[in-house]
Image 1 (cartoon, rainbow over the protein chains, first blue to last red):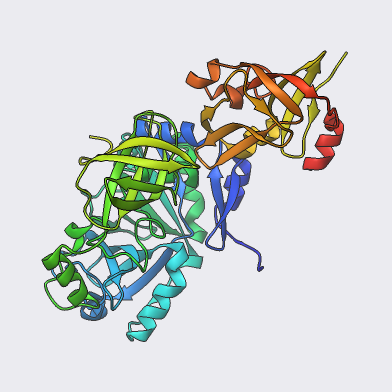
Image 2 (image 1 turned 90 degrees about the vertical axis):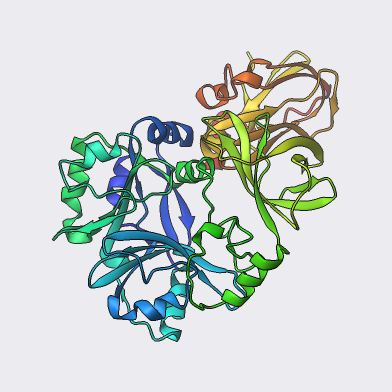
Length: 340
Length: 120
């Protein structure tokens, strides 16, 4: 096994007493003082996440038509200065990766999952899309929470929601993965100190990937490798709202057919009225429709167990039964979001 | 005076006369992270050495605490049902999980300094 890649923020993580996990070939902070504490900090105040493990590619705007052929969303009509969540599809219409684009006048920044970074690079090369890989020359820091925007406003101009800006030092967008307002900020490694000192002065504290996962789950957001895989289409993952590309794109035939027939797997949210966690891989039944838990954890805000289930087909009842290590536990399918 | 003994599976037990009190070690709670739920056994339930006695759910993963010897449960820490986080804050004190009457004594656990060597 080669050594794990360490983040450009490693010395800060060590100073802050991080516990590390290996994730997609990187050694990243899992938590500092505890996942629940960090979760609540982001829900009630503010915190920052080091997400430098995520892939960051700069693509010249001249490749936008070629990019459009590979994703299910309408990037061609996206105004300059806007961010877009979308999905790279396979020929079968399943998800190769879910990504964020930041569109600028002359170029696009593509942010992909760390686990899919090499796959996306190869995919772009296959399609003759040239890119500059910025991942190892920059850091990516997400500042999130209801007080995040206010706290960052002395450093940078604040963009509108789902918009992006850049200056000589920072390239950033008002996006995130926690359900809270905030910014995701890319900075070259040689200019990182100024940002870290600013976070320190503003009392914006570090949070680990453990709380990033509980926050995204509670915010009803999918995670690649769980709710989205090369076996699952955006239609099946309840991400039909991302399908806005009106032109043909890779796998669009399969996706259009799923929409037309309704004949496909279905991702649902669930809640269990207790703290018994139904983890990834737990078998579920809704009447006679079988499902499997893709992600499940404890919701610190609801104080209940929540998660996602992938059912073989549309269940006809909201009452569900989990087989948690041999014990049958009842739960409910939830139609709205976990947090209203 | 008796002192706590530790198992390779990261439980501690304290033997007093014919009863053991059991919990998980500080190292174990640190590795698990935030504990959000525990499934405790019923009073009167019998366990053989190595049986799963308690299920501990943390945000990161689920773990089990195993019976260090054959025993029968006489009391469980009911406080943990509403405040499982006590296991994080005081794993070797208020975070105890089960008291059980010994059926077959097996006092082969490690002393603390031996356990410290084991986990380092």
